[in-house]
Length: 151
Picture 1 (tube, rainbow, N blue to C red):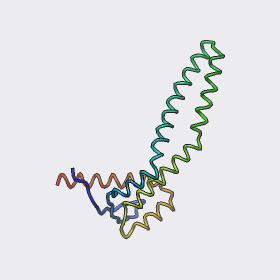
Picture 2: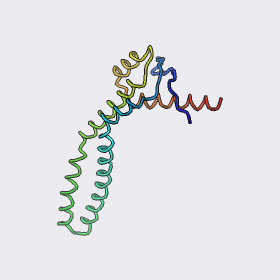
Picture 3: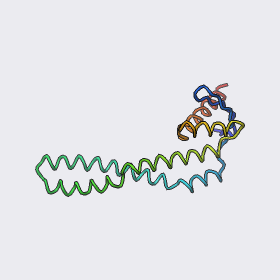
Picture 4: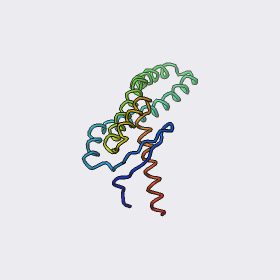
């Protein structure tokens, strides 16, 4: 399957059309993103594992409590609180911020054209996440590729 190199698209947001060109990430750009944001994957995986573990521990705590094993339940409660501290809400905000930065970098590396800066300004001004923007662009490219392969 051949990958596209560049593709012109007309992206419409709130009735405003932005004409941009989308390109593949070059090898060096992929390496830069991996280097800068590679730790995010590990952090996200650890967070997901901790959330799953926390769910299992809470179920076990409830069973111990219902069974009258109060000391065991209290011991488990200490462990639950330690895991909850690891996945505190501030980590969610940090993760969302890192994701937005990563997708903003990807946007800056792959999008060009006369409307690029206008699009960037609109996205920043209206607080549209770059994750949402890049996913929409990727979907448009996929649909355009699908249309070309059928035609």
